[in-house]
Length: 143
Length: 423
Image: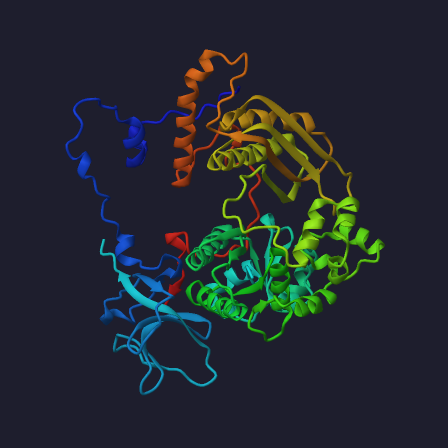
């Protein structure tokens, strides 16, 4: 068998998870009294995603939805299985481009921005509009 | 009647490419094989332009692009994720499902007795997959797998249809089979259809009417089963536990030919490393590693195809052993003076990794280190999966021929850096 030299590794170079699994000595003392009460840590997926197969993440570019608390570069959680209603925030494809806007069905079909700097988009006859899905949450990162 | 359904994603790779590119609706799309060699998928529009499956990209490139065609390098991260989503949705709809390939699955519909209900279920299923994942599917329903496959074929051919076809009444089955050439039947290839044609069997109906004993004695049990399935006798059940893989192949063809051993070696090492990862992922060990190198069949230069296998005394799943074997095999089959265009590593003769088969001469020393070696492999696999690239020396990172994937779309669903954007 040939042994290929991989170089040496130090604990500082490894992500925390490996340090935990492979470099920590195994202690054989008194078992932790918390062992019987172990619960899994809080999982953000569980909070944010109801239907994984139908959920897609989309990044926002621009500030047209800033008053709906969706900033530039926010990540949208888009669930395709939720039927959009009047007033839902949706991701739609309009003339070959994705847009995130509030859906208005009455009195006239319209995509409303949430920033007075932008004009509402009234969908004209012959324009290609396709609702991709309903936005159920947005993640804004501050740091 | 016990019915089952075949769900088949329409032009799957092309549909995937279109999902996050609404501007490509109704545009012709082709997807190329690894290294942009040849066409492996076509949208409906590309098919209508006369682009054939498997045609080398360089042959059609100019004319296709001039007509406004779109082209993509294959993006298996995207296709794999979307396939998982489709299968997940289907798994939620029936109890028993067999994932047959990346874009096909058989569903057991035994809970639906009435064929009208089966048809309605098909429509529902198609709508849900389209709504939730955004991938169009067609659905063929029938009493056997072979007939369900034919029904899906009918659904595809029907212009302006619902994408769902249920094949269950005997008169209707007869009618469809009379118009279906035998090479369209599941599992009947070109050679077999030629041999059947020699016996004046042309349509699927002709085949269905054949004596099963004659078919078995002249051909095989497999073909006899096909005949029975055409008659509506269920011979193949929907199996959700697929047999484990029996072979792992990692191979590529590369645009830039090379006759240099020192360029081929890191390439083979890369394939061996990838094959080793796949092997451990399957929970298997292999007893044989083979290397294939070949010149291009499209080239006018001298042709050569080299193949050599190395046998291990004990089943292995350690990349270092696989690398040693692959490098030895490469040395054995390499010939000077050829312009190689394709190379590959094959792993064979699998046994389950928990089964330890000690050879007579297996020394204690080796088994002592076995645990450590397994841990090392697990650690390296984890690190590579997390994006911390660990290389083996013979891979010569940076020196290997880069893969040609110039036209790959973003990994929209599997990478934070490549998410689709909305304004």
